[in-house]
Length: 80
Image (tube, rainbow, N blue to C red; front, side, top):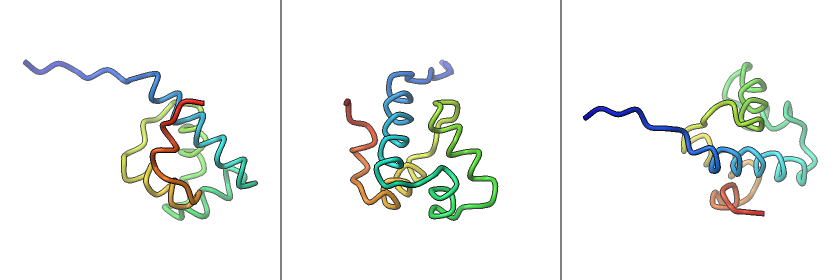
């Protein structure tokens, strides 16, 4: 049966909070993080939406963010 998967709001919240936390610890603005990721010029809006839990980034994007922030990818999913 084809059932639609639901978003795991807890994981999305953890991810969004941890992206913001680690970005701020590095002293980076959203724009600076977007520039470092260097995907495209519209990525600023995507980072902002990720930090607010409005979009679900791909695992590849999460890995890229972790690399840019110089942390392990698992740090983005850890509880406080």
